[in-house]
Length: 447
Image 1 (spheres, rainbow, N blue to C red):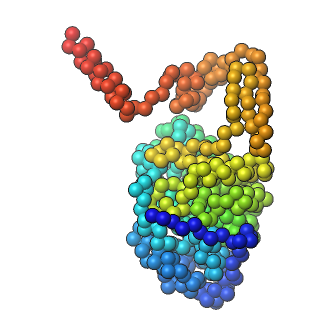
Image 2: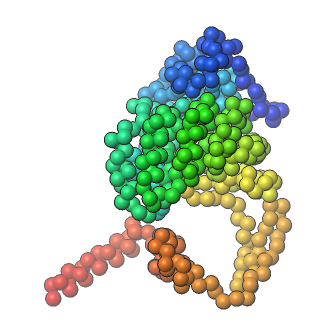
Image 3: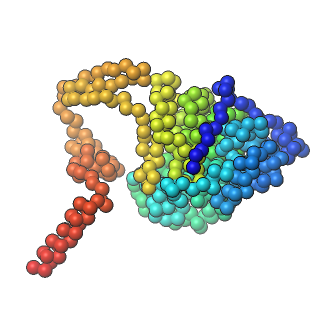
């Protein structure tokens, strides 16, 4: 399928297109108190074609998209986020993220229902355990808005609701036994779209498990529904430190005064904030746009953490860029802005491979005497290696030997002396080796 390149503003400026809600016919009689109430917003999410037509003059592609995509992935846009969509620009970066397009009905041959193998790595319902010391806990399938590029679209926007306390109990019981887990990430859906009491129940239950050190919340609510960040919510969250929150802004147009207010409330409560952006074709696949976004996040005390290559979920190929575009953007950020405004570029490896950082190559060559490196300007420099004996860590390190949590998986196991090689298990050679070993074992038993 050939996908046309979306138009960009010739001036390079970000179109505003943000309207006061009372200028939109659908909400002409809505009061300020209603508009700023997150529960009112959640109860009036736009989810029909008729409502959307009262907000935007839809293109044929959008109108067909709303109708044809319903069978695959519902759409829902909170009034606040809808007010950010430019009615005069079909390529508005907010509009592209929120309004279905007919391209979503195209499933590429490389698309996957569960591209990251979250379900396969799930030992109990609602929990994914992929990395040694941390897990993902899904507490709801409900979001404030159903992003058109959602990687977990097989799960979200279906039954609409929080998991019951009973539903999550097997996950808590698993965590009580999994002593190696020190970090739990709450996700969904959006964990901030449950009520305060339920969220506090989850946090309190996790804090009853001694070996869980860190709880993180992954939420797009500060972007799509900042009214959700209330004094009551923040007061509750600050009782469960150390607590971190990663949010999700993809474009600077989403950083509104309302969003900044919500972020400030969280930061003032001592909650460290990070941002995870998805690299989206026609929305933010531009070094200038990405740099501006990251700099504005930093001004709001949000640390740009990751920007992701778009996953292989069904129906979102039109959002994907080449990996080379992400490397190009990283190259344009490193050295050209503050280091803490440069997120890692991540490819979440299909098939459950996990997050893999990808970057330009700054190491040109190396010997036992020096390494040759380059900087962001293309300058080439040498760094002399110290003339000292090899480090004892980790193979002979007393601290690593005493630390039961020290990782021995993967390459770390080779460096730690646990193993001397890693080979794929599904090659023909490995198959022959297993067959040979089995034959030998049978022969030995027969003697």
